[in-house]
Length: 166
Image (cartoon, rainbow, N blue to C red; front, side):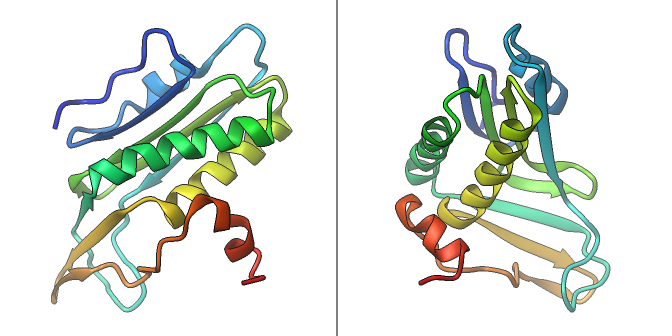
């Protein structure tokens, strides 16, 4: 899978990549003259998870035919909720991810910090809840799929599930 590249004429950048994610390039791409805030979130591979010490590698798999459209839908929904946002990037790794490397990058630019933070938080939370991407962990005593696996929800169900009203 090739590295993800920013779009030439669009304000939404979604992608899956087997290469390291372009964290800095995504932040730079999001800067627009009308936007005074850029929020960047990077979820990095760490050396532990609940009950698992010495995690050495994470490997991600995605159902690409579903993942990319769902990621685009998240960006579109963010624009509905925060109409003033400028650019949105949703990028996720697939394949092995070494400790300390970014597994997911979310970037949102907006005229003001509040909407940039809110939209970025929505985007990462919705991505985790609605996009078919799975994590396999390798640690000192074995390997298995991540412990926090959960049932994926549709984007229109996300708020209800997140708020616990389902």
